[in-house]
Length: 303
Image 1 (tube, rainbow, N blue to C red):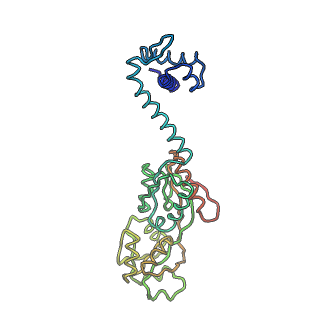
Image 2 (cartoon, rainbow, N blue to C red):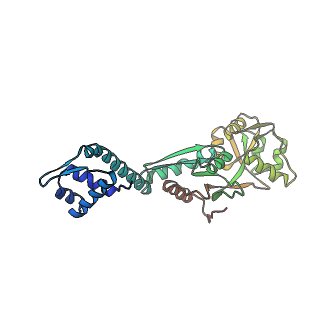
Image 3 (tube, rainbow, N blue to C red):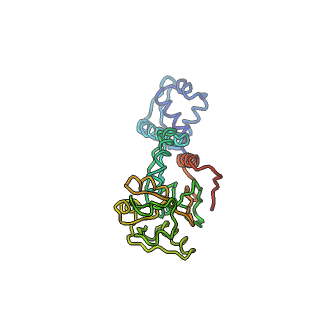
């Protein structure tokens, strides 16, 4: 059955007015064009919707029964068009973004505030999960955007760098190593060390970088979350290595932060998207806001 929206509009206008002349004026159609639309609709449905005489026009019983259904159909159609138009115009919409807790607790709130000022009617769901889970959520389509460390070679993902994050050392207040302006990795070999549990990408990054220098750190304690690491450091259980993104949060817990070099270990933080999955207009707008928050320097998508 091939019934058009134009035919539904013609039927409803004629049913409401009861007059071809008035319906033609409402629809801005000629009377022959309106008559053709009604006739084609009746042909598709298999019978008359109107009874006609020289002086009157009225709905048949079948026309009466069809009238509320036609109103609902046209209303749903108009709402659907309205909805998609508003989404394209960023007056409606929603998307999910997954991000590392270090990013959600530091830079993301200001970025969301900027986005909300420009697009107050867009709903954003934030998933603050560990870096490895950010990658999986984007890969599985559970989040359109992800903010995480560079995951390395990933043929199904695109990574747009935002900034470089350097690993720093978190120490208890009053710790002897605080006397040094900049620490070396050798300094951590002789103190109580708190590490992130494997398979943390930060743990792997540290272990790999130190192995190249024939160094290793033996943890006295291990934990899965950076928040736990920060509190353990603040309690005096030892020192740890954390991203500079989380430095302010760790300091708020009562620990101190120092840089560490020889070598300085850095890692790119950026936005992950699925390579072959188009972004919604709302997610595209957020991607632009994230890009505008990047540190100065060329930003290039890779993979």
